[in-house]
Length: 466
Picture 1 (spheres, rainbow, N blue to C red):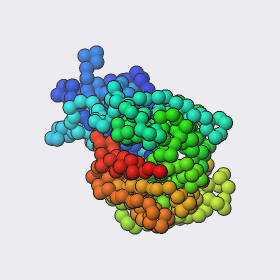
Picture 2 (picture 1 turned 180 degrees about the vertical axis):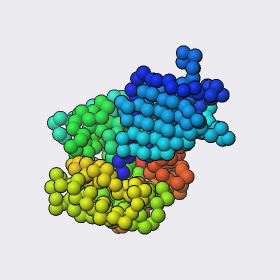
Picture 3 (picture 1 turned 90 degrees about the vertical axis):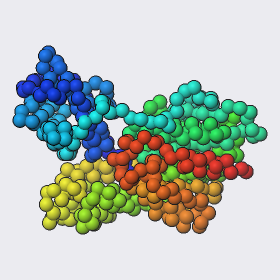
């Protein structure tokens, strides 16, 4: 559920100034570093231009072209890079013993330590599960009018080949998590919904996935929309899918990931045509509680001491308790005061580590002012789960740090034990096999979705006959 805050470097090609000699031994070699705070890989190399070596930095997920330089120098084993136009400063020290560069990265409020280690070349993502044509099924581009008059949703419907079974194929709508998502739920080089749709359609299940309103081929106001608006969109797509001639209208369900795991019960609780729902890392409490769970687990993974985590969570609880009683124009002032009060005895480094600086409070004020966030904080999925009568499959990974697996027990309780709950060991929020479950791992993992999860979903859908 947590909206990943991915900080992208702005790529601007500018003239550069050469101010020093680069050792000839570095020519043509490559180094790699991960900007963990932004889950962004970076590359460094040195190549000849006009007879002299100069540094080239790359952000390979954003562009195959190098970043521009305003000025740079290489003196006493220290590489300095500056681009004033985008506020980027790098200071890296060369270590000849282990052939690495280590130093600092700055852009705006972002401060990070980088460690560039030798690599074979530019960073490339390996995504072995990503489907490649030709496909053994039919793809159809579709558009659906939303319940709001200004919303039009564009998507892809995949239909199995072969003899259509009596009544039509079973079918599902895929509903993405929070944030502006396209029909593939594309994130950090992964396309989970493309992979899942391919797997299910090859297995005899029609799948409709769509771009969020205001994203890709879809139209509509995303920034002022809430989870309830997104539920209206999902229901419009569901109703459309039920009317397709190849589809069995009595065997159409909804698969929701993360926030989609709230949207699916909202729709199912009021639309009795929904034959079943699947919740992938779906929460079963209020948004405020999810954010507290999230923050605790993420900071634990980052190694923050328990004492600082406690202070961080105390600040969040005060903020969540305050927003109903103050005007939006007061958010920033009040949040800064809360952060200053709880962090009064902390050092500047401790405040930074716990996200309790003035800049953090200002960013929090912007987030809390969003209509989506104001709805999300109080929306309780248990309300909808209690009213959902169709079969439910709920899946979580044991290492999910965004919707911790304790939510499975809450789902089971809210449905009075009727939901089928599956906990998969070693999986994160994206249903990948992982080491720690940290968000920073998502992009580095080649697997997009664990095969056993997709098999579990298929078996559940196949078993739903009415």
